[in-house]
Length: 143
Image (cartoon, rainbow, N blue to C red; front, side):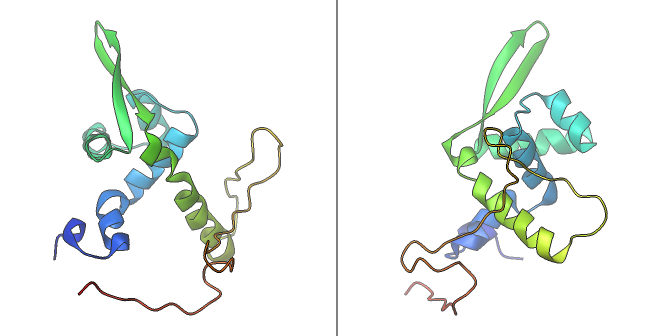
């Protein structure tokens, strides 16, 4: 398989970084305020080695920053960067798709902390003002 991070398609490049479920869920939890290794591990039920690997990639690629909060024993926390904060709409777009096509049974709901209203995202094309997905697309490869 080709290295996706070298592809001209920005979707492919982005998936190379966050295209696995664990990375997406770590980013979800970081947006919910989790910062510490044990918090992520408890929330996700992920193996420590897998969590370490995913946090390392997300940190190396600029989605999270690692800050030392204890020297004895050495402990770090993981804080969202600007790139990480800008990823929230992507997570909510995936969640909106899931609400429409993977709904059923008990599901987690997301609310605006200030207004208390449930978040119902809509992705709009800045140029046309049309909701993304309502107009045909054309893919143009670089020359």
